[in-house]
Image (cartoon, helix red, strand yellow):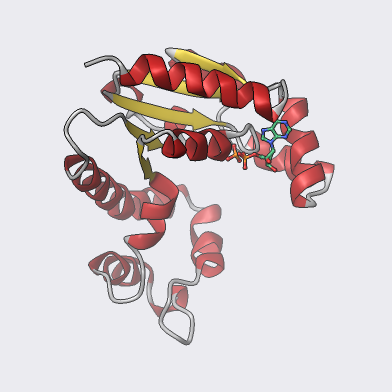
Length: 196
Ligand code: ADP
């Protein structure tokens, strides 16, 4: 059983992912992998430097995310070039981790931008952690110290709530308490883990 898990920023996706891992699911974390494939000394980082030059490296030789962000932010072609380097590497590593999972494991691919890409159709189930936009803003302000404006700008840069719900086969409502979320995740896990 292969599950895609997504949710807007501060929806509670990482919380859900951690609960699923606790319950025994094998979680493949796309954000984590995206950092690993461009660590110092990787072919991924070499390819990024070949495309964008030494200016995207720190003096220590690590990827300078702020510098790279500045290059691709205003240039859609550069962004596509970067994605064409990083996405296949992330995909390949995700497939390797999945192949290493025990037989019959519930494999959960935690992918923040699942609704923005074209991978949703490749999963048996797509779980979307859902809250109204206002709740996302409140949690970003309360827990992460963002200003309202920063939170709203960040949310606007992602797919909207309706676009995410459009790819969902399961919706986890996270407007209740953390305990209610845990119970809902436990129920979902029990059901999905029982399927072949
Ligand atoms: P995401 O991974 O979607 O960005 P997180 O799982 O990190 O979101 O959750 C965002 C913030 O909201 C965290 O500080 C988390 O503890 C908090 N949070 C998650 N679920 C709830 C909830 N049901 N009630 C209150 N706060 C929550």
